[in-house]
Image (cartoon, rainbow, N blue to C red):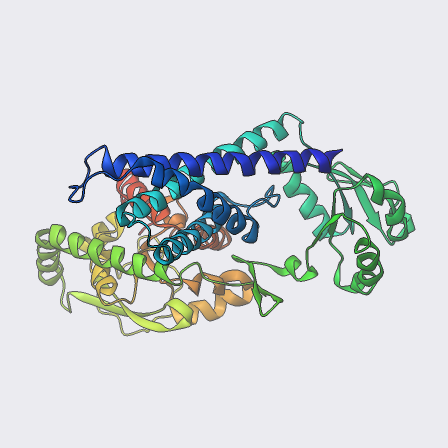
Length: 464
């Protein structure tokens, strides 16, 4: 019943897509020849010629959208992934249409019409699909269009999957129970779901299922073969979550390589255009900040020089992205000290701190020279705060996840800092916030942190 209902929705979406494509083609003709957006040199062509072209358009787009599998269930997919698939199918279809009209030279079609059509399709289909998906998700939250699922494996991984599905009620997936290989677990409840059977009971439950999540721990994966062999004889959708996901710590993602699934466990969000965008944002932001703060930095430099002997700037080796060291700049806030860099945190009322230095540290103005590190590409405006190499070696023994913060460039400010985790505060909380930042990085997240840094000010009670 549910599968027939799903097929009906897919057919409805297919017909709606074709209607949107028709409307976009007619609108493209209107914008080119009747709206006057561009000059018309050869007169307005007969509307019927463009109307007849709708037939090959619908054929090409229908085949293309089916080929790109745009009508598969996407309960757990993202809007962006669907939009990219639509963009690929739409672009390929336009190229095929252009080639088709080039071979049939009975009439010269306007290139601007094709361009308008391509853009209109992207916008209209993208928004209509998003509205369609959100409508379905709303219905599922209300209890409609539910799919029944079973989780094979009642361990930590199976419980984690169940917990996440319960959070995302918009998926419309209802977990019927767990299957386990341990008879002593029968009847127990995890995440509000009952362990209702053993692995061998899968055949009994299969007729009432739409989805099966296979979440076996490492010592039970040998039992997966029989389960998967049986599921291959059914029409049940099978989703396998590898046991390696129990050890995921940062931004994991799966991709296909020549038909093989490859799982990246500790990847950085900065690749491709993301690297370019963040680098440009950092350079422009640092250049603007240095220009605006140049008079203030000059005053601070004179104050540091006149109030105590020694250099204006203090250079200290810090660990940067991928564990590479760099020399971080700060205004000198202490008397010149020959004892070496052996103190993890500067104690309160440290006698080495100068009078002007105490003010600079309290207001974080001693950090301003780090914009030069940003210009050089050694740091970013936003990112995890860098630490000295010897400190990293000590802390990594206490907090294993500490090293993952070096997946991105160190920052002048960061998510941990704007949430109050700096100075003499919990290292665990700082690492937790740094990893959250890396996991959820975006340009907008960076801008949010910058705004919070300015809004909440630079003064902090733990900075001394």
